[in-house]
Image 1 (tube, rainbow, N blue to C red):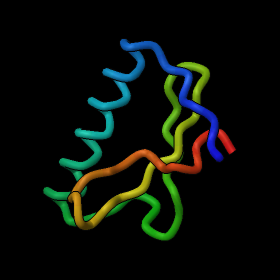
Image 2: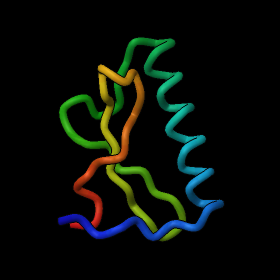
Image 3: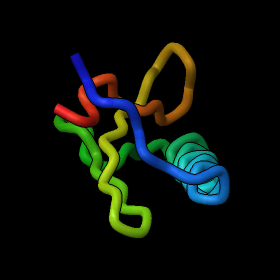
Image 4: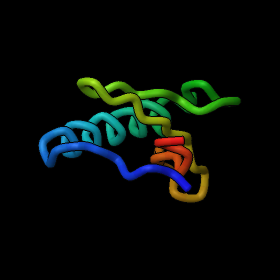
Length: 67
């Protein structure tokens, strides 16, 4: 089981904004970042894994964070 994310509200807002912008890049230019593996996004001292979800058309947080 994965450990809970340890982010403040402000960090979570910044992280969400970054994922939204990455998603817009992917939709606008039809490119995915690290298409064959998870993308690691750093925010302060945290490193979170995300991946593109074709169904959601968005980058989503990996359920493997904290392992």
